[in-house]
Image (cartoon, rainbow, N blue to C red):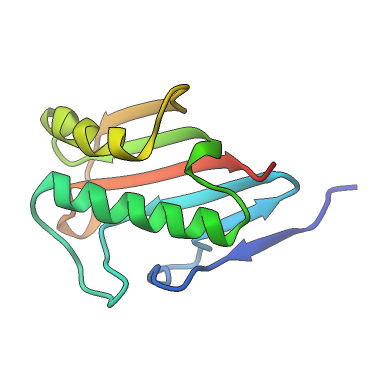
Length: 127
């Protein structure tokens, strides 16, 4: 029998604009949906990839903490960049949030919605 799972929302992280949860807890895992650069006040940050990355990773941190996890427990990250040439600038900010051993990661060039430059999803453990 499958164990129950629960949705996670965090103060300061905008509610989704579609039919999905910001994050789901299942057993000891946290699955975080794609995050975009939206500040706690609901203001979209569309512009410099570094600034967008900072906002996205702060939102990830808030969701993980609400779920009983943290940045040091992230197992995998998927990164979607409107311009794959922004990967180096993305990495400069990313390294401020993650330390060795780094999570596994995929990074691809993609059509990111809403004119944003960065979208990120993640899987983390709770223990």
